[in-house]
Amino acid sequence: MKVLVTGATGTVGGHIVEQLFSIGVEVRALSRTPQNSSFPPEVQIVAGDLNNPGTLQLHLQTVDSLFLITQSEQTEARFLANQRIIQMAKEANVKKIVALMDYEGNLIETIIQESGMDWTILRPAEFMKNALYFWAESIQKEGVVRTGFPDALSVRIHEADIAAVAVKALTEEGHHGKIYTLTGPQSLSNKSMVTQISEIIGKPIELVELTEEQVRQNSKNQGYDDEFIEYFLIEMAKNPPKSAYTILPTVEQVTGKPARTFAQWVTANKHYFE
Image 1: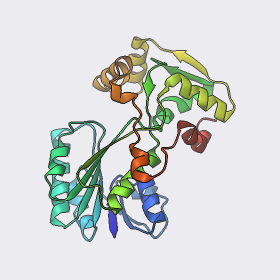
Image 2: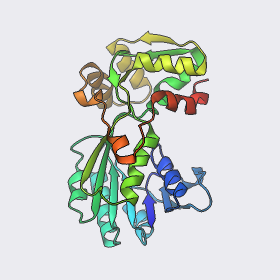
Image 3: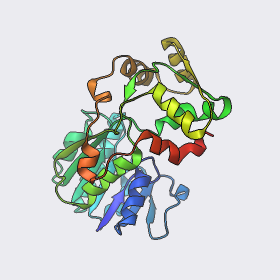
């Protein structure tokens, strides 16, 4: 068996490559920046860009399964690019496609379901790694976390658990036509996560609650656009859907192992906060 993993040096893709390699599956790892990879020499590392489907055509040959990471912002150009990749996979006789999507209603979902390939769709909750992007620098430099809505709950998931489900779907039977919604094992607030980080790194962290307007301004300063800020950072925190804080057993049901906790994730990544 041979698997093509797109986004192979990314947050989830890197774990998938490592886990496939560890069970003896032949991996072709695709990345826009293959020079940044640190995979074993047995992993075939290739260059390709999901926004330029032609760069994937050669790499789709002779693989049995495809892991496809889709962009949350489905512009027309991205939709057409994904559509072409799926068509090329079918023409290359790829038997199975597993796609990572971050919300229900992604336009490319129907194309995957009607592709004629065995398909599985993964919809994970918020990544635990987001704690790095928003908090690591201020914890390191100041011992402070500035956040709005500190009591808002989230069922954040460890990226390795998303990968573990993907690996099962890519390499085993019984996952065709399944849409897996994936969560971590706990519903945690920002406040409780900051407390756990503080305990694990052995350093006090001050939590400073921001107003809505401060959240908007800080996020703009960090380069986020207005639409992302209003929906993901304001509305989802103020009025989260039930799915944002509801724990699901999917990871354990698919993999046979309990989902990893936030404390496990922090312990493995504590050097980013110290």
